[in-house]
Figure (cartoon, rainbow, N blue to C red):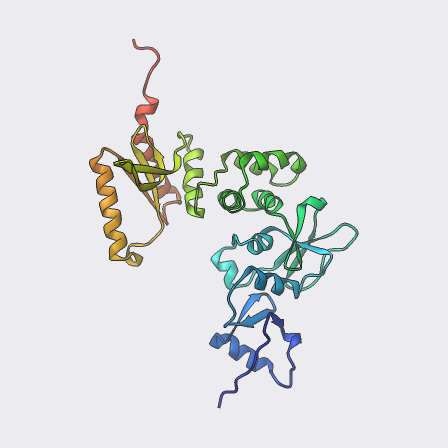
Amino acid sequence: MIKTYVWPAGPFTRGDLDPEVVSEAALKRALRSGEIRPVVRGVFVSSLLPDTMELRARAVAKVVRPHHVVTDRTASWLHGIDVHTSAELDALPPIETCALRGHEPTQITGVDGRTRDLAPGDVMMIHGVLVTTPLRTALDLGCCLRRREAYAALNAFARRFGLTAADLERALPRYRRRRGVVQLRDLVPLVDPRIESERESWVFLAINDAGLQLPEPQHWIEIDDVPTYRLDFAYPRLKVVVEYDGIDAHERTKEQCESDRLRRGWLHDQGWTVIVVRRGDFKRESLDRWLGELRAALDPAYSNRRWRW
C-alpha cells in the first residue's frame, strides 16, 4: 500500500521534513509521481499549489540569505520573465545572487553567489526577497546573455514594465568598462516594447544585422476602417510583411491553418509580399534564405539612383 503524505502548505526543503515520517525514498517517489515538484534547486512544493510570483519568491527565500540580492536570470524569473533555456529548466539552474556591500558571496550549494556594485535604487523587495529592479535586471541581462537572448530580454522588460530605450540609455554610463557593455550599447537603441515574443526579437535583430531597413512591429491593416489584420513586422509603403510562425505544422489546429490561409491569401491578393520565418530559420542557410527573400522584396527601396547616365 502506497502511503500518502500531507506536504507543507508552502515551499519546503528536505531539512524541513521529519526524516522519520518522510524518508529520502518517499521524497523521490513523490517527485517521480508528480505529487510534489521542485521550484528551485533543493526546494519543493506540493503540485497542487499554483506557480505564482509569491510562491517563487518564498522558494528562493528558503536558500538566499537576507544580505544577498537576487540578480540576473533568477531576478528576471521573479519579475515574471523567464530567460532560462529549456535544458536549464530541466536541470534546475542555480539561483543567481550577489552580496550587498560589506558581505561575502554565498557558498550555498545551488546558489551562484557573486559580487556586484549595486546602488540602493537598484534593489527592491519582492515578497520578502531582495531583487534587482526591472531596469537593473534588464541592463544586467543585456550584458551577460548571448546577443539575441539579451535583446529579447530587453524587449520583454520594456513591454512588461513600460521601460523605454531612453530609460535604458540614461543608465548606460554606470556600465562603463563592465564586461558586455559594448553589446548592451549596441542593443539598447533597438529596444521596442511592441515586439511581443523572444523569436520575434530574433527576427527583428536578424533584419538589423543584415543591414536592411527596419520594419514596423505590430502593424494593423484596416478593412473598411476596421483594424482587421495585425502583422508581426511590416513595410507598409512597400507592402512587405515578415511574420514569425513558431508553431510546427503538426501542432496547428485546423482553425489556425484556415485563419492563416485566409489572411495570407488576402494579403497576396492586395499585392503584399509575405515572408514567413519559422522556428528553425535562425541557422545560417535558412537565415540566409529568408533574409535574401526580404532583401529582394525591399530592392525597390534601394534601387532609386540619384544620377542616371
